Image (cartoon, rainbow, N blue to C red; front, side, top):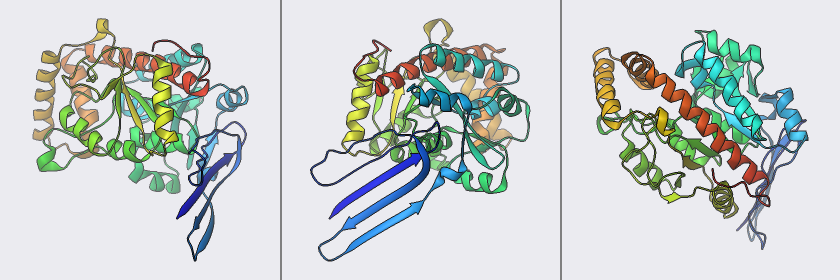
Length: 366
């Protein structure tokens, strides 16, 4: 059987991926402008030929003017989630941090594309007013894969999680996504089966995710085991071990250490060129000056988890609760750490995006 598939998005200011598998051609991933989105699939059997043409998600996407201008100028895009704005930090630190992170990415030569659901559309890049809306409103829903259809059909206000942002970034042809820390296997998962949808998304959606490892409130060992089972490579830069959000070292080694952005880009491009669908995790530790010790954060996490259990907090409400409690218990020090790691991740992600877009230039160490 020979399978040929192409995904083309064409509308002013956006890009999308085209994949071809079959024949003697090596699988490739490209970017191109879009005005329409079509999936063309042909399956050639000895006695059967099927041609399918489907209109897909282009009608749900709205691109900001800066994102359009960046694409027209050939500048790479870096996706940013909006859950960190709506649920990860208090106002006004959330808005200030979001704007500072966007400025860092622009200063390095890429264009930030913060993603959210507003008025029944997926917004790729947000205006100042839209950022304010997300940062101030108490009516913002967390949106993962499961929630996307309901939120878009209902026209609600949604902040995308890691999984939700990956899906939207892939639809928009964005290859690099910067977040604080990925979700993962929650402590107690053998009894609760509480495993973040982020991990499944990493297994199926081809976006590179730059993070400060997994949130230290999780079972990081089981999180890494889960990623290994699903074939998701875990890269680290600046150190051999996988990071743990507030603290630099989780105690677990990453699969591969690649400090140079050009090397990271070659690894990622090779994976996708081989037709190995799915994401790549690039872990980089919080700057040492802002890091918390493992012992401190572990004690605080245990206390916050006990409080969550006592209050009956479960599901997707757990992570915001734990982050808020740890912030309170540290008198705000954990928030400063969170802000520092997100900014550092943005710098690493911008350099990676540039290296993926312009492999001939080389960008030096991350």
